[in-house]
Amino acid sequence: MHKSDLVATVADLADLPADRANDVVSAIFEEITNALSRNESVNLVGFGSFFQRHRAARTGRSPRTGETIQIPASTSVAFRPGKALKDSLND
Image (cartoon, rainbow, N blue to C red; front, side):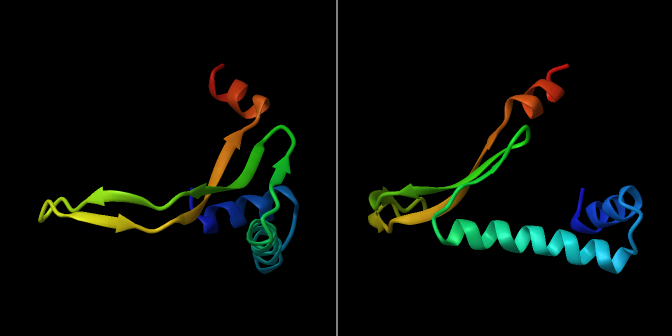
């Protein structure tokens, strides 16, 4: 499913014009992004949680040359599905 598919579904289910549904979906995504950038987790009960995951700097090996390289620390987004979502997939 792409964002445009999600917008069309929201527009249909909520009986909204497509441009208004697009604004709603975009606002939700923007607020999730803003909360994560403030290092806050986003908990959607029954669906799951989005949170930051930090990786420490480490030493790696270049697959091309085989030489040792330093991989810098990084932050990414992780998702932990809620029980209701897991149960719906396993039925």
